[in-house]
Amino acid sequence: MYLKRLIACALAAALLAGCTTTATNSPTAPGTPPVAATAPALPPVIPPALADSTANVVPVPVAPRKVKIGLALGGGAARGFAHIGVIKALEANGIVPDIVVGTSAGSVVGALYAAGNNAATLQRLAYDMDEAAISDWALPLFGTKSGVLKGEALQSYVNKAVRNRPIEKLKLPFGAVAADLKTGQPILFTRGNTGMAVRASSAVPGVFQPVTIGSRTYVDGGLVAPVPVRFAKEMGAEFIIAVNISTQTEAQAAVSSLEVIMQTFSIMGQRINQYELRDADIVIQPPLGTMASNDFAGRARAMSAGEKSTLAAMAQIRQKLKARREAPAAAAQ
Image (cartoon, rainbow, N blue to C red; front, side, top):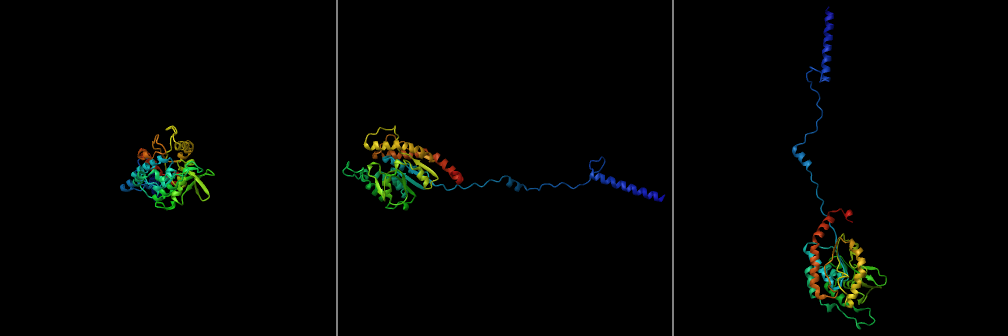
């Protein structure tokens, strides 16, 4: 009897233990009290200050990179005074070219500017310039010579204005474009006698005598590069401001022999400019109207036209220059 009771107690204890285990593994069983279970892992609590700082991370802006600005000044005889107005407007707005390239009249202004003369000094030089001082007539005028002006006076004028420094010693990198008379190929002068390079670049056939340097003879660069955009790029410019002062063929009728020559240049240069100017970032074309290529008396009007047209384009210049500075170097090319 005693043994039966002992066995019964053991079975009852085993049964109660089984019920408890079942309740633990099956918390939804009816009538079973809640049993503490291991809580699932929770994500770490981030303090509010840290949470705010990580959610509001602002990317650090990339500093604008240095962009080399090139100024490409075209040819056009007395209309070249407009280049001074362009430089004045750029200077007033804090835009300083790193490279200057010029053709013909553009090489004259370009050389003087690259030498370190600011806009005010260039204006003073323009007003003081005596046309006769750069007109050294070749006698006899209609003899065997290939031009009525020798060009030596222009060479001397430029050398004096740049204080007799060679091109490589000027304050800014400078290039003057001329054409090889024999091959018709363009040449970019970036070293040597500044006045001689400008003289070669300005040697309008039939007006100025061709210029011999070494074993080659050169004439006006307007024959091959009326506005030398590609040469500014060749010299390392990444953002090019081109100034086109050539005569519009419909603007005026050619009267004098010089005007006939310059009009011919304009006609020839129009097709070249279509390709040349498309590589410029900014093209400034001062409204010079019917201003003649030998109209030195119109210098003030030309400078004013250059300044006003540049100021009118200033918003576009700033916008494009800002975009170029913020673009990666590879994307900007």
